[in-house]
Picture (cartoon, rainbow, N blue to C red):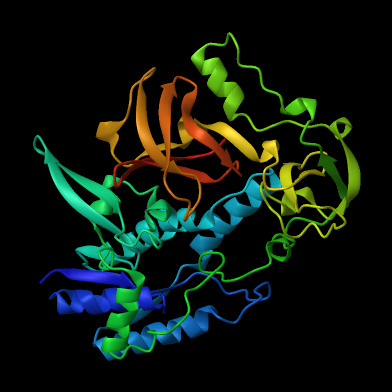
Length: 394
């Protein structure tokens, strides 16, 4: 009998995942990861770790599987929280959920499970894995979930072949409604429990309050940029392809003289590209959106309306050190290109584009301009339903 250790989070998805594994004949052990202690910055009591661990324990008792709790808060602090603060201080916007999967769930948690004699680990992610053979080599494919509204392959875009070979996603072939139906049918207490929101393992937070733990508030100007600003014009005529991609992928660069001051803020690193709420500046006919932040001069540049041209880009760039191929065998060589589908954030519908690989790094040229492409976030790219690679947006 194969042994599987499942990460029980206290939610309905991992609950039903554990149930299905037990029904399929696996030896199942539930493990709750305690990764966060400080609840002083949370704004909701929906998912404090203590309540979640109690739900997880009750689910394990209901299903009839052993249950343990493991404290990974030190590792979470060093690998996720410290990285987050470092990125925000630089004016970039990290994705802690993707990092948590790469660094905690499918690294530290996987090592613990293997140490306990497990053959596999399992989680309640809405995605799928299958296996193919190329020559004498086994290749594991990371596929999107059946439920396209809940597909979570994006959050697993940094996994590698070894991690996939040891992972099971029991509900990837189900829709969310089917998962809740199974939970109710089997009388699981998490059947109607709301999905957790906010930072992975932290919960719902007001991001500025969270960042104020280390990033000290400091007054700065909010500068409005007109949609006809000369700095928005990009001339790619006569450029070679790599030069053209470089121009199209660079974020717009503004200076104070490009606009006029309309208010103040408490710290540029509290804001991110495309942000609408939190500026607390009224009196305009259309909503204001953050176009760019300058953390060195402590300036937030904004524009009026969601169609402001500075919100849109035609391409993005990923440095060589930040490129990750889930399928190394599909990696393109220098000066080669590949048509792909891609997404730059969770729940964005898959978009069409072309990957170009140059010595400097990897570019994705979009078929149509995309709004709010944010430095520090991840882009993932797909062939059909398979996620084959990802990278950190420069």
